[in-house]
Image (cartoon, rainbow, N blue to C red; front, side, top):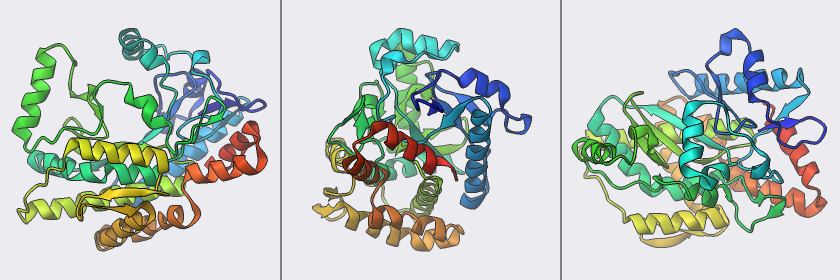
Length: 351
């Protein structure tokens, strides 16, 4: 979030920030749909630690650039009080086309997420891994929930970003594809029918990204604290590593029902990990915190092989001390000051 330093309201300032970023990070700081939003993106990295160093340095860089222009940077999945009606669309053809096609749906999209790419060495394996991640999506959303406020009000949701983005087409829980042939055929069907220009217009919570050779997880709320972003990168890579091993061992892919995953995701958006979520392996409801700890424990060996165990274990902070959403709500309940909450978010955004 790009904000004016005095008011802490969103500022339409992406172009001036892009003009001021150092040459060595050009292309790693990018625009998004609205002029009050910036995106930072690492280069392809060999591991989580390298990616974490880049993310931290990129945050420092854009914070410094913004400060020189009387601006501040904050990271959260929603601005607690901003109004989408006051935001301007970035002057790029794709964004104007999107806003023109989707109208109010696009103009309301004042939300912020985290995308994590994991390099995969085989197209069939990429489909297997993306299919395998479907059942984890509600838990990942719950753990990352960090948007309890919208337009100056508490929403009684831990991720109000989720229903805002849900209005877009081709979002949320993806279909189960089963094979590269089926996936590519269905993408081609949509392209022939005029629904999409190419597969990048499929904005599922997890998707194969053939141009980059990755599987991309897109379900996460943006994290205020950079160490949580790095932790989710460790979790994502460890989960992909586990599923890759299962693929290599010829374990059958499991197709959990779309409607059950989607229902679980709505629960996660409402309660984060503070209520019960559905454990598909056991077919029962489980406290979200218990489920989160179980997944971290299950992935520790894979994280150790990938040299990111410490980063993965850093996510236990969300279980023990609350998700970003819980921390925002606790602060607001105590102080009742939206601007003060935004000031806290800005302070915690700096690495």
